[in-house]
Image 1 (cartoon, helix red, strand yellow):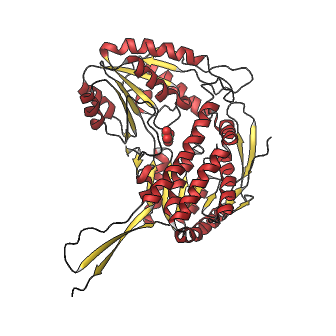
Image 2 (cartoon, rainbow, N blue to C red):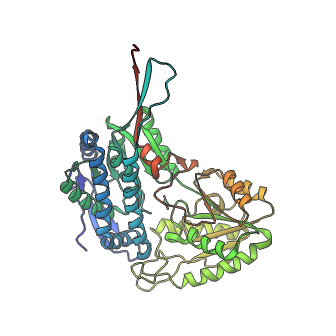
Image 3 (cartoon, rainbow, N blue to C red):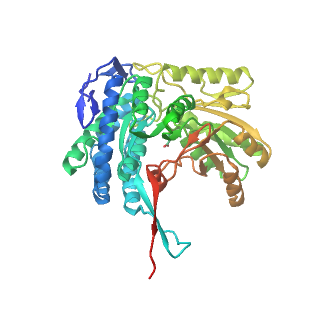
Length: 488
Ligand code: SIN
């Protein structure tokens, strides 16, 4: 076992947990990476108390100090990029090339939040009457809580923490139990930079433990003013109901079921390139990965033939995620593989045709969590792979005959996170982008995630936006001061 940080980071200090132990497993090898002593409700409450006090300290910091602090965190991440990427790969199974990309993606949220905070402003609307001025103040909302997923162990913390700090808030993070080590490695960076810059050491805490226990204690603390959660729709609903009694502000980034639409006028090579990015990034385990491929009937077969050639090549790059040449690692756990298997079996039983893949990949000396990149054609909306999020490397393709049919199919799910449209007709591109009932549209773009964009979904995919200036807004509240002005 390596020497990882396994203590909780609470109130500006590393402390040993006081509850059940939690094993962190490398999904590629099955090896135990670390055992973390979990946090009890009492320890989580201590973190929430420290968070409340740190919120007051953050509010007192000048904007320049905050911005400097947040920029230093970006540099701190970049300075430790190699170690963070290796750890991220070890606990999530993400191919090392992608983990490096995630580390840079995480740093970019700190850059972006610092820039947004530097430009943040209140308002002085035009007065309706001569004797009144209305000053609109933008204030930090205070103590916040973030619950983050295993698929982006660093970037999802960054997406929530960077704007929180830049806006003058504090945050306790509960990372996923599968990937807590990256969060703790980042906590070491945070501790060092807070010490060096004189920023509040306790404005960030990491609490790991039984999810309902830890989340319950953090949400029920009277000082908590906001919850930001990325994860499943089911858990999002439970958390929202826990936030409801005290009307805690929520940002919920939940499940997706993204349509990837290829029109007959698309540049097919480009569409295939973007499809590979959209579908197979982290083996299909991101919330915005394409789930349903909607193909214009005249080009459907041509597109699939070209895609299949790329998938065949990809299948030769499955293996140890620590290797530079690897493009596909393991899925996160056995349940994830079982879900992919169930979706493929269900589709085939209902008449889908398996073109390539459709089974686990056996890799000598590694776990049984590797799954071949898979293409199913002749899918239909009744199949599990079309109406649920597969979260794995499976293309489920179906044909459409008109733009109206494609839009109807795309929107016919309860989710609305991302959608993709491949076309060279600019009128169609805008028409379809506007018609898609989702929060993110990739227009000839299979990888639309970027720190400056307001990321978030609609319908069962959640509410609230994170990233860019809107991400900063989400951590501030407006107050107006109405002033009577005496005239001469
Ligand atoms: C997610 O899967 O939740 C985030 C996707 C991204 O930022 O690319």
